[in-house]
Image 1 (cartoon, rainbow, N blue to C red):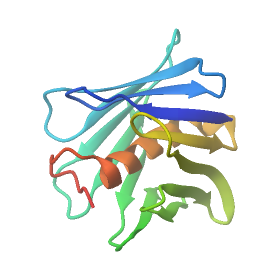
Image 2: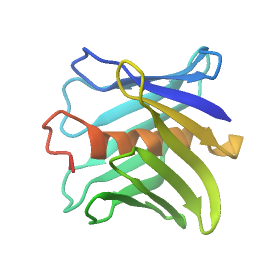
Image 3: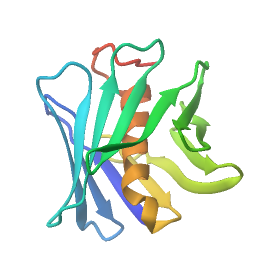
Image 4: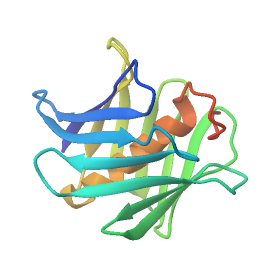
Length: 163
């Protein structure tokens, strides 16, 4: 599945839209304005599917919980690296690696590519082209991508590990 994640600009909290290649909005991502740490909700437009992203504050490196149906399905943990994106997705054997400067990332389950991400450079605001190879993992993959953007490229000085 090919999607575009676009961060809305001129907002006080994190907001994204997720659209297909034709520009049809499929998901809406809303951040909480007053919260300790980052908290976002991904909602299907016109549907009931929902996933929550919540930052764990008491952690040496940035950590985020991803919840679906009230249950934590995974945790995104940034590894200590310089100039590279490197995240573990627990409890799965998933790893995100990539190039921070070129905004290119790959999510792998062992040697199997699950998602690839590439920044669209000639756009207003941050826009990413995301390819998710298994439709069953769309919501968790979108949540992981949004966490990567918040940790590595968020301009707000929220103390959320902007490296």
